Amino acid sequence: MSQRLHIVCVSGSREKLQMAAMVASVAAASGDQVTVFFSMNALPYFVRGHSAEAPAEGELGALMGKGVPPFKQLFSQAAELGDAKLLPCSMAVDLLKVEEGGLDPVLGPPTGLTRFLSDAEGGQLLTF
Image (cartoon, one colour):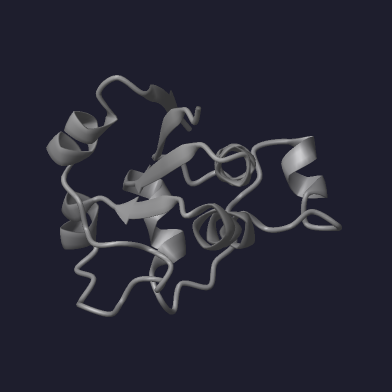
């Protein structure tokens, strides 16, 4: 029986995005139902044309550039291989003034927090 896992990504730090992506990809590959909600400082990394790298908070974050699959690749694998849902926060999309087609195509439709939390009821919720 699969678990329902809901992940909220609000941090723009490399370590937190990387850990959220690892959890999402492993859970999705294991057959769990995974939904990831990107908001605040996490969402800009999924806007087309955004080229800045997520800043490292510490030593391990600085080391992750070599030999570790990047978080965007892991989130994509979670969606492609495990059918994870990757949802941008509608409020953050509005604040960033992202036009239609301006988000990474791996993301689903903009979703409100109320809807996300309603759908998450009864499942496990993690925040990064």
